[in-house]
Length: 82
Image (cartoon, rainbow, N blue to C red; front, side, top):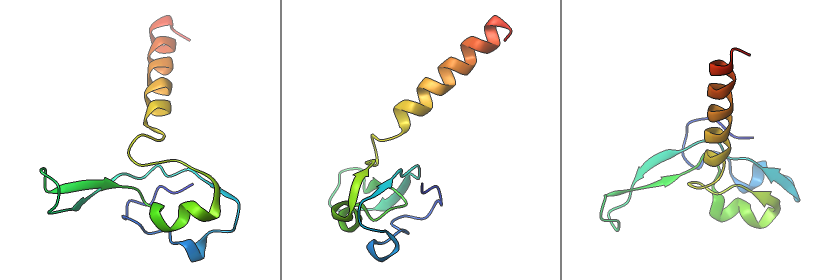
């Protein structure tokens, strides 16, 4: 699990073959080729690490849905007084 806050910090030499990587980090880096001038990347160097993994979450689009689900569940539990 990577939640460091540094873009592409985790490199292929840090990962064992067949590892499962959950990249929680989301970082904005400059990218002149994009209209916005930036792109989003995770804490894991996805392009170089993905081939070594049995599973890896993408950034963006990986764990965000689970975060929203957990927040909604906790909100409902708070409203119900549990």
